[in-house]
Length: 136
Image 1: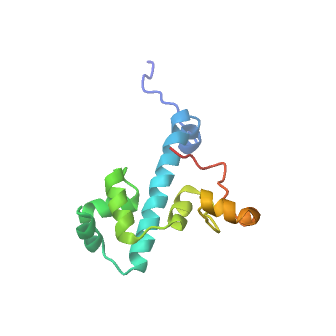
Image 2 (image 1 turned 30 degrees about the vertical axis):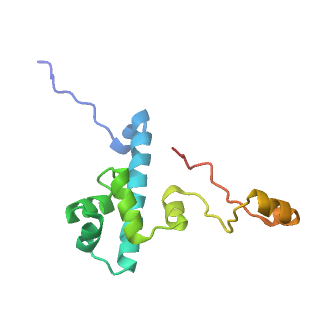
Image 3 (image 1 turned 120 degrees about the vertical axis):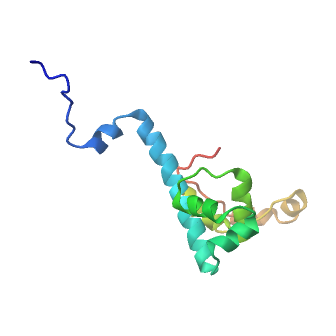
């Protein structure tokens, strides 16, 4: 009698999953959500703020804050903006999440300033982004 339930046994299911082109895309998205969640958690804890307090300030639920911090949800831009405002996110926070170097020095160069301080233009530093970051 022929066995119809012959299944292919996989020694390493993760190795097989990595062969799928969608795996890399999904794992990068998940990694960014997790890094965002960890950054929100760390800043919230450094400010001695509870999830309930952050939820109250951002007009969302404690469950949503928990889901964001665990990386299990895609955050709406409006919610992320409220969290950013409540926690006083800085460029350094975003750079840790999206792997780019934050500016060391930033200077606005306007027409008047450039004319008066032309010799100082060489002193202005800019920031360098790694080739890994994708800006939408």
